[in-house]
Length: 128
Image (tube, rainbow, N blue to C red):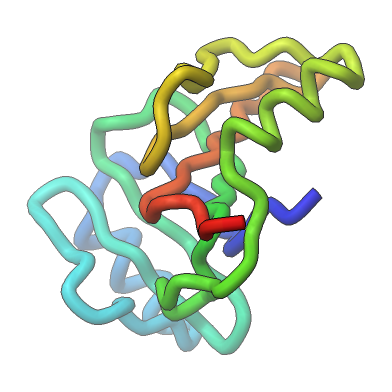
């Protein structure tokens, strides 16, 4: 199962203070991702999203179809294929992708401890 690019999405109380902290650790803004309530930062192969609103809990995030630079991969598992595979293994999404659609979609899982896992596909699935 190819889940794509991985990042950790963190809930922060003060976006500017959190950004300054992570920049001291060597993280830099991924180009053109900052907004009033969020920013994506990278350090080498690590990616974190800082969110002031928009998410309720720290979340593991996967982006099928993207590499770490948000370039579209030539081959990847569509989020609906991932969802069907997970359901076949007994993992039921908290919020499921509509399997009758194509293109960008997402699903949300929770691990046994309630940690959210966001599988967020931004690009159309490759032709087979």
